Length: 186
Ligand code: AMP
Image (cartoon, rainbow, N blue to C red; front, side):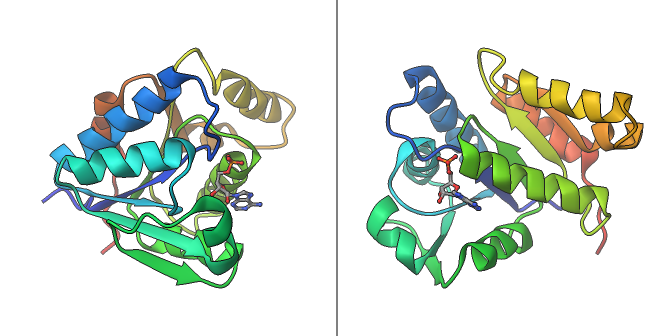
């Protein structure tokens, strides 16, 4: 038993993203389903979020969406999979964290970055020990990793912070790495 049952996916809500990123999201969704893991995401029917969720669902995987009520109008309802409707963005983020044992960050915008940074900052504070991988094509997340390295270089963060995250362009490698990094805290 791996200990990993659910993987949370943070990613962009834009429908105008490069098709290569949409395909990557679909590949990830299928890979999560193939392992018998649940895909947990922010709910809705937009962008890479929907691409990953729909691909997992169509591959026979379990999917859970967690969406604030006010966003349902904007990001839609994916009626084919269960959703939990919450009041606030903060509740959503807490539930995404609680319902998952690992996090994938696909390409996305400011919302994706915000979710990823909060999850990383909580790991840095040892509030959780759940592995987190940045999955992209075209070096999308490389500037973010350069930013983290600069923080370490300028002594705003310990070197150990860099061990909390990794990046890859391969969904299967990303999921394998979760198994390598998972620490069972009971
Ligand atoms: P984006 O990467 O900007 O397309 O946003 C991806 C997802 O993050 C969407 O579901 C947004 O609703 C959500 N999001 C946007 N802003 C925030 C925020 N400040 N905190 C948490 N999630 C957000």
